[in-house]
Length: 351
View 1 (tube, rainbow, N blue to C red):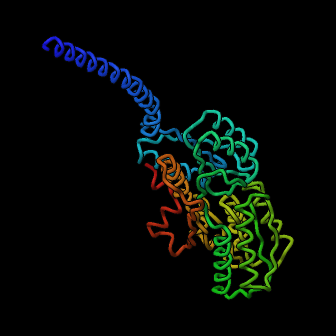
View 2: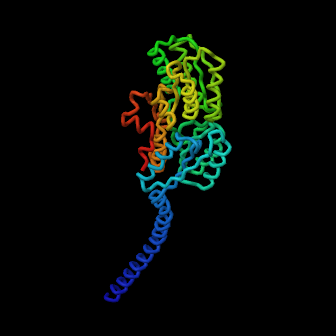
View 3: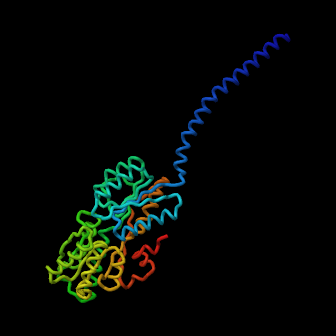
């Protein structure tokens, strides 16, 4: 009997040992698979927790104060967020569309984490932007809308609305001076075929026709974003039309040229001139009365919010497809308010 019990005990022990070995062997593949999954997910976790993101900020031109203000905003955003490193790019002139496209293509090949771009053309940059988007690069467009949905967000002024504000202010100033709402108003436009300017001029024209249907519009006269050409355009309009009562210049370069003509001809009390954006020359013209108002966008905000929107996109946040960055009417009367001073001269906010 004892022998039988001993044999049974031995068989039971052997069975337990074999079961334990089998269990360990079954666990090993599962443990190996889990380890492999952890190894595979580690790069993804590291990607989500990058210490530094590379951003490319591309503006329309480096020869304009407006775009320098955009870059101040972009660089300040990077300084406020140590996880962001910004590199800035841009062609010398807004007229050099091919150069901007070349810059963008080179940037895409460098594969930054995000691109913030003010595209001079609504069409020319689309192939490179779509390529970047397909590679997983976050795309934020500012100022000018591009003809593709492959972007994460678009930040810009409502230019039709802002152009309407310019027309309203021009009419208000004419009335204040007792100038009858008849005669001619000239439009000087920086460039042909640029959507923001098309919208801006349309907003101005439509509102002026609504407020003063007897006023005849002359232009737009396109000047390739050149101050001296803007001077010539204003001179030519005045020479050819003896009943000019007002002007609208749709960016700061055209505003500079227009203000020079108003000043040289001493027309401050006879012609109401309204312009867009700001730079030191326009600010002096506002102070002197050569320009009666400036319609200001928020270039600093476009740069700052553009960079931060790209960062939010990288963190997985859902962005609004369009953000209106606003516009403000600035006159000699309100130009010394602190908030307005910072809009007029964003260098005051440079860090």
